[in-house]
Each structure stands twice: as structure tokens, then as C-alpha cells.
Image 1 (cartoon, rainbow, N blue to C red):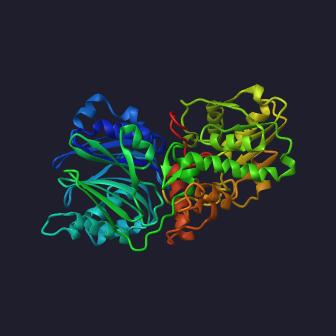
Image 2: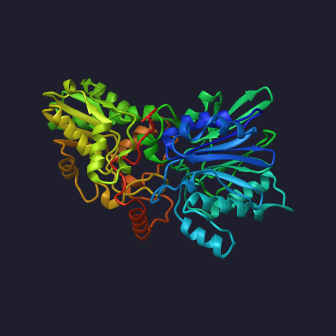
Image 3: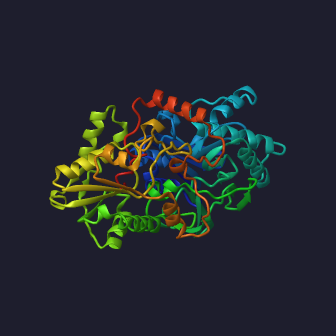
Length: 503
């Protein structure tokens, strides 16, 4: 999962891009990069770390130009972080193209071989995003007329990308001397939205992973980029768009609404915050029918993304809602810790219970999801140590039983706590007296109720149905092997941890 931003304006865009990355910091904290364009020349700066740590005033001064793209990076499935994989990537042939990508190509290895053996293009890193960049550059070369590009040729090139690439991809790119290009995979798995601003020089355009990056920067939402659609804005601000895929369908990732996106974002016409409220309402309806849960004294969220669900759940059940944990926002993500003991210590440092909210009470803890179970187990034990008489646990999402291959870094299937276990067995594994999971149909309804036009979702981590149709057991086995080789013990409980500003 990553955050991408692209801007075509009439004034320098370096500050806009920097501010846009700050607003999308929750989508990736391992690296950040900005590329701006002044005529045919690109100006680039990128590096590892949080946005605020990567860029200094001297770097920003060198990022001149009125067009630019930016990226904040989080590793995708099976990958390990390398400074060389900071984005945006750049290739100088045929036109000079720079690209930032959110998602994951599921056929990147096959494409890499094709690029080397048939197209004589060299990919220098293990990043599928560099593969995608080279495919785009090759398709631009094939679509160009007399070594020149126009919008029609650019859209033909994107259609070629759709034919060759599989998986999830939301992309922002710049073509030297031409303008900014943005496009979305034909299944619409990863989000992409476009906004406009009326400036003195004319209309300006901004594309981003989430709507939260638009309005704070002075842009109003125009619309979501459709699945398979490409947007091209030339250097004068001319706007062009075209559907470039055959039979595109909208299947947004359910995990965006559960956890990944900021609550104040609207993705594909659906409010993330309202969706999470409805998730809580659906959980409340389910818990109301469980006789063993009739003795709950207090509802406590696991900070921070589960708060809307926990609040609505408490309201629907007429129970007290309390903040029982204080989060230290300056502790690193638990999954990068080298051993189990270190991960446990980190969880204890990250969250601290407020004893008075637990002592002698039957507590219902609410979290957005349970992935590995390590963090959940530690939190349940903290609640007991703080004096809770009983500890119940509710997840706003269904059991995570399958790895995500579309751009969310999750553990191997054998590391997922729900693999091969019933709900009662999972409750025993995390130490809870009772465990309640959201039903998948209820989760889909919670998201769909805010936008009935959403008829289908990408929900593979819950149901094992991979919408691109190309995921085999052999692919998943290789993914697990790659992960074991690159990450040792793998992640902690969560798919990732949010930024200090957000969580």
C-alpha cells in the first residue's frame, strides 16, 4: 500500500506535493519521493523515512516546475524495503518517463522476463513498480507516431499496459515535455481520485490516492478515476480522459474501508467514516443476539481506526464507551521487530491501559481486524492485568484467512491466526473469553449502504477469491517463500501501522 499524488498547476507545485504526501502519510512510511517537471527536465528527490524527515528546505528549492508527482512507499506483498526502491522511478527511453504506483502486479516476474528477453529492457530492482514503468515506456514507444506523442497515442499505450499487466495498480506518471498521466487498473482495486482548482492562470488538476489530499490543498473533488480509465493533463492544463480497458468493473478493496484509508476520506463515492460507523452497527446487531455477551459493562476501542465502529456499537447497545488505552505515537511498527519477545515488548510500549476503565469490569474490546493475533493477544492480557473481570473481543472485519496480493503487505497464510482455526479456537489463541467477528456479507452491506452503486468488492483476504483470476496455489507458495527469505519472521498483528498523525 502506498500513497500517490500528481499535480498540474500554473505555479510551482513542490509545496503542494509535499503537503499532499503529509496528508497521505498513513499510506506509507518507509520512503517518500517527489519529481517535478520544468519543460523537458525532471527534478527528483527521494529517500527512506517519513515525509517530514526526507525533505529539507534545500531539497525543496531544487524541485522546480509547475507539474509534478509524489509517492510515499510501503512495501507490497512479499517484498523487502530497499533504498533503491523509493519512488517515483524514472526511465529515460523513449521519452523520459517517471512513475509512482500504488498496488501490486501479480505477473511481474513474467513481465520482467519478457522485458529482458524480448524487449531488451533492463529492470534494476525487485520492485514491480519498475516493471510497470518499463511496460508503460515500451507501450508509449509503440504507440508514438514519428517519435511524437498525442493524447490518442498515450491512451493506446495505457490500453497496452492493461493488456499486459495483471493485479492492482493506481498510477501517476509524467512524460517529459508532455504532461501528467494517471490511470487505474481495470478492476478498480486501488483508489484514485481527481480534483480541480480555479486559479488565476486557469484550471489546475490534482490526482491522489484519497480525497483527503484534495480539499486541504484547495482542490474540489471532480470525480473518482474509473477502473481502466486514463487521465492525461498536458503542460498547458488541457484535460483529456479515455476508457482504455475492455469490460472494466469496479471492485474496491474492502480493507481500504476497514483500516487502510483515513476516516475523513471518500473512496468511490463512499464515506470511510460512515462505513466504519455502519460496521459498528452491524456488530452491535450480531452481539445483541449472543446471550453470553449480555453482561458487557464497557466498550473500549483499540486505537485508532476502530473508534468509529466501537462508538456506534456502544451507542446501539446502550453501553458505556470509554477510551481505555493511551497510544504512544513515537514507537516503531511492531512487525519490524526481529523476534517475538521484542514484538511483545513493543506492543506494551505502544499501548498503555487506563486501569480505572478495566478494574472489575466485563470489557468488550473492539478492533478493526485481527491478522496475526500477536498484538490482540498482548492487548487482551493487558486488559486482564489492568483488572478486567472478563475480556470479550470484537473485530469489525471477518477473519483474515488468506494473503493479500494486491498491494497490502500481510503475513503468509500459515502465520494468519485464523488459518485452520474456528472462532472459538481463535478466541483461545488470543486469550479472550468471547470473540465476535463481523460477517462478510454484513461488512459489504456496511460499505454499500453509503453508496448502493458499489455492487462488488475485492475481498480476497477474507474469502480467498482473487478477482484477477490469475492467482494459483503455486503463486501463493512462491509469495510465502519470497517473504520468508526477505523478512525472516515477518509481520506483527496488523497489516501495517498507521502514521503518528493518524494511526
